Image 1 (cartoon, helix red, strand yellow):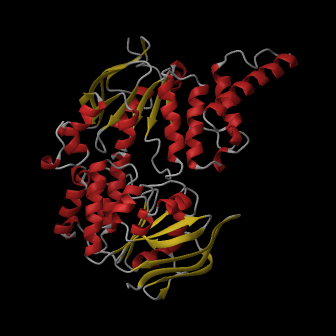
Image 2: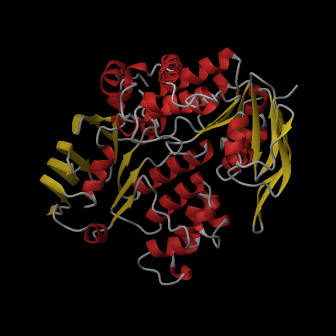
Image 3: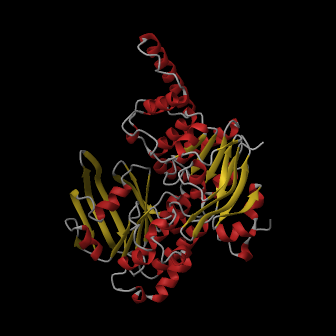
Length: 259
Length: 241
C-alpha cells in the first residue's frame, strides 16, 4: 500500500494553474525523483504536500490519513519532512542543541514531570544521547558543538537531514539538495541520501536537476511539465522518452539515443 | 596574449570583524571567459562584490580598462559598462518581467526601444522570460528568476559580464542554451567572469581559470590544463572532475 498519495492536487494563482490535477502514489521505502523544466511546478507540488500552500482542490493522504485540511506544522508531526535551507533551524544554537530540540518535539512528556530534578536530568540525558546518535549517523558528530551559522553549506544540509531523522519523519522531501554546493561537499550529501535510500525505512522525494544523480539514486522518475504529471516510470525509460530528451534535457530530435 | 581588462592586485576585504579576502591577485583577460572556482567559503562571492564596490577593499587595487575603480561607488562601476548578476539575483518581485528587463536596458525608455533582435535571442534561450513577460516577477519559480537575472544582465551589450553561479537551479536544457549564449557573447568580444560550482559547465566554457582558497587566488591557468590534470583538481577542488 502506498504511504503517500496525492489525488487531483491542483493550485491556481490567478489565471495560472501551477500544479494541475496531479494524482500520484509513493510506495514506502522508495526514492522518487521529480524532474521537469524550470517552472514546471516541482517546488509548488512540494509546497502543496507539506502544507506551505493550500491546494485549490485535491487531497494529500499519508498512511491512510487525509492531511488536506491540516496546516504545515500538523503535517510535519504526522510524518511529512521537508528539508528547507536553514529556515527550520535555530541559527544561534549549536548543531547538537538543534537536533536535541527536534528529538524533544517528538517525545511528549519529556521535561513535563514538574520539579523532579532526577527525571529532568535523566530525560535530558536520553534526549542528548538520541541526538548524538543521529549526528553520528549523518557524520556530523565532530561538529556537534558548532553554531549553525558557522557551518559550511554541505554540513548545513546534513543537519537538515539529521533534523528530519530526529522528527521521525516518514517522508523526506529534498528540493535540489546539492544546488550551490561545491564539488568537494557534494559526495557527503549524496552519500547520505544514498544511505537513507538503502535503509528502505523512509520514503524519499527528490527534486534534482543533475541527471547523473537522478540516474543513480531514483527507483522511479515522475516528470512534471506545465504543472501536470506527464511521465511516470522506470528511470531509464523515462530519461529516454522523447519528451524528457527534448523538453527537459534539450537534446534535438535527431540526436536522441534510441530508447 | 590578451591584455587584462580587469585586474585585482593585493585586494583585502574585511566585513565587520571578519577578514575575508587576504590579498587577492586576479587577472581577467579581455575577450576571454574566466572561471572563478573554489570551495564554499573560499571568498569567490566576496571577490565579485568587492569588484562591484558592494564591499569596500580595505587594501589593494581594482583596475578596469586601465582605470583604478577601487574607490568608486557601485553605480559608477556599473556605469562603466559592467553587468553583474549577484547570487541573490536581485529580482524586483513587484515589477513585471518586462519592467525588470526595461530597468536594465539603459538605452530604452519603453519595451519597444529594446533591440528586437537581442530580445528574440534572449527569448530563444529563456522561453520563460517571454512567456511571463507581463507577469509580476515574484510569481516566477526559482529557476525562472535566475533566467530573468541573467537576461537582464545581457539585455544590452556590456564590456564585462560578471555572474555569480549562472547555472544554479536551472534545468539541463536551459544550461545548454546558456552555454551556447555565453559562447556567442564571447565571440562578439564580451569579457566574462563567472563563479560556478557546476564543473561540467565550467569545463565547457572556461578559457582561463582562477581557483580560490582561504581568501586568496591559489591557482591561475588555462581551464584546459586544469581539466586534464586530475591530481591538481584533487589538490585545488578536493575532487577529480
